[in-house]
Image (tube, rainbow, N blue to C red; front, side, top):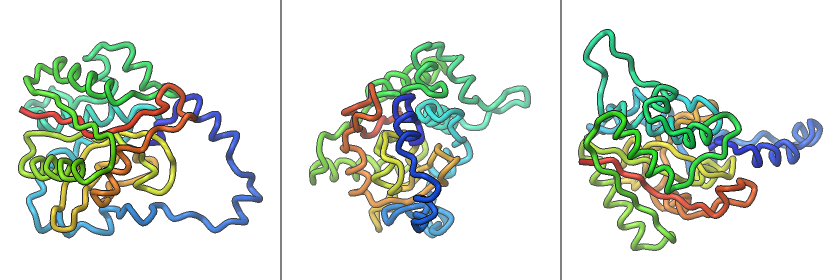
Length: 249
């Protein structure tokens, strides 16, 4: 997620190839075969209502630190569900403002530059806290699959299909970003922007905007990204797997 923990950042720096090694190799593509940027494929968005894309896309902002993918995603979801404030004196809630409103020192520390990032359980907890801070009477539930089997793929598709019907709910996804992008191997959080059932592809509204724009990925690949355990280099997040945190009525 480029949500680098202090430990993983140190390991990454130590393992960075030398200039000679880098120049001797062909540059890697920006995205691997399992991710297609929305700039190259927007046919679904032009031919379908895509309510989540239009409701949440304008509020998705770059994570304000390399460890802040959780707060960036939660803030985008809450802003998208709330809509643009009605009066000129009202601001659109920023990530630091959301942290201040919630008042949770642990979330602030985990999201600070060099922070460890959050667990799946903490994402669910902090999402509830953000809704409470904003006075939004919405429920939070989770889909936390243990394996990439047919039953979980069916349930994931059901949740995506339901989510695609209207922008009155939101799906936050905790996943291994590298499984999808083919690059950095680590846990990450972003927001679901659309589901094209005809092609079985999911649009990720990426908050890691230093490196990416929104991209499509096949649903089975996304399930694999959910269930891949976090490696030991990520310290306190070792062994974490992901899934959906759903905000709904």
